[in-house]
Each structure stands twice: as C-alpha cells, then as structure tokens.
Image 1: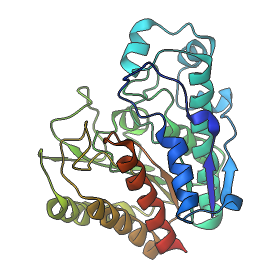
Image 2: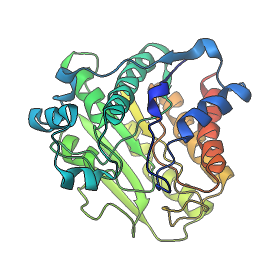
Image 3: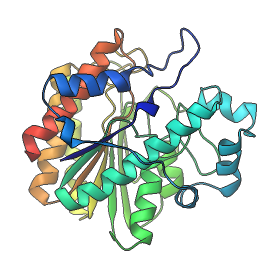
Image 4: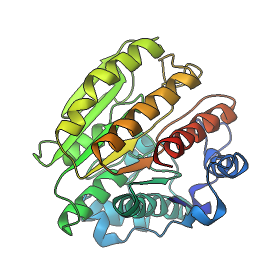
Length: 298
C-alpha cells in the first residue's frame, strides 16, 4: 500500500483557531506508532500542477490563490488567512489525492493523510477548503483515459456542496453524501443522492442508513471510489451535531471498504474533517479509518 503525506500539511494559524491543523502530523505519528502504516509505505506528496487545478477551478480563481490577490471575502469564507505556506499546503494536499488515486488504481487501495476538501467550488473556496482534490483527481483520470466512471462516498458530517457544484449532473459520476441536516454548508448543491440525518443520530440509525444507500454506489459500476471519511460525525466533535461512537465510525469505514472490495472497485481515501477536543480523539478516529482499510485490503 502507498500512503501520501507532507510536512507542509501543517500551517501556523492564529491562536484559538477552530481548525486542528496539528492533526496531520499527529495522525502520521499515530499510524507509525500503532504500526498501521510503515515508513516505507509513506510517500511525500507532490504538489498539484496549475494545469490540473484548472480542470476543476477557474483560471482566475487559481491565479488569485497562487498570487495572493484573492479577495478578503473569499478568504473569509474559506476560514484561513492567506499565506504562502497555506498555498503550498493546498497544492500538496490536492497532489496527494491525485497520487493516491493513481496508486489505488494500481493496488486496489491508497490514501492521503489529508484531503477531502469538498466545499471548494469552481471559482471560490469555503469551509476550510481551497482546491477540490476529488474533483481535480476525477477530472484528471477521466481526461487522461485512466477511468470512465467514478463515484464519491462522502461521509463527512457536512454536505459536499463543492463536489456537487463541480461534478454534479454528469452521467459518469455518482455522488453519495450522508450528512447532518442542520449543519454547514448553508448553500447546498444537490449530489446524486443526499441523505440528511437529524441531530443526535447515533450508531444504529447511521449504519442502517448507510447500508440502505451504499449498494447503489456499486450498482453504478464505478472504476474507482473516492471516500471522504470525515470523522466529524463523532459524538464529541465540536462541529458535528451527530452522536457516533469511535466503534460506530469503524463499522462505517469497514462497510465502505468491504463493499468496495467485494465489488472489485479500488478506493482512494481522504480524511476529511474532524474537530473533537482533545485533538487526540480526532486523530484516533482518523487512524482507525486507516486501520479498517488495512484489515480489509491487507
């Protein structure tokens, strides 16, 4: 297996910022300590190229981010202050998912220790998302004849409106998004299938819902599944409003991985959101996702 990371995923933020930027370093550390991933399986992410960025984003938006001319309003919606380090991080995260997608096609599974930036739209970002890594990777694979059909399974607690706004309405892409009904984003865009869950949803209802809607993803017969495995449905998450346990999240991940393996469909994993305190709880939940992948794919 190959897993993509970058020390540039960690960017200094103002004190008391909600986003847990340190989770990326801590996740890699925990994966190695728990022997879920070995050093030899970790590969430094290459930055995505500008000509791949414009497969999913407008050239004006890309240049405004790269040059720092992006408007204050757009950066406010993104939720980060602009910096050169932030740009490098965004390029590395998107490049990591592109590489993981190619590795998944070769090996059956691969993952990025970041990514899942599903709120980034064609001409603007929001919700801590600058460039949409899934949209970039999918359009790159299709344009280069690597795949004909792709699916996204988005189980972050927040609806993937950027995925839908860039990739929605195509007959070669299937998007399943299961999210909290009373949560961000407030500008939603229809996925192929959206499923809203009430506040306080716990393991049983969540897993029952997933088992009902997941099979249709594989009936679509995608060449690859991109899995946005946000752990913010966790009960302790500050931004989640749902009530899953760590064990419930493990069962969720195993369900996705087992159905993909049974269908013979490669999986590209990105970690998505997670905002629990202490941050180690979020990191544990992310590490459990990789452990579930290891147990299913070997």
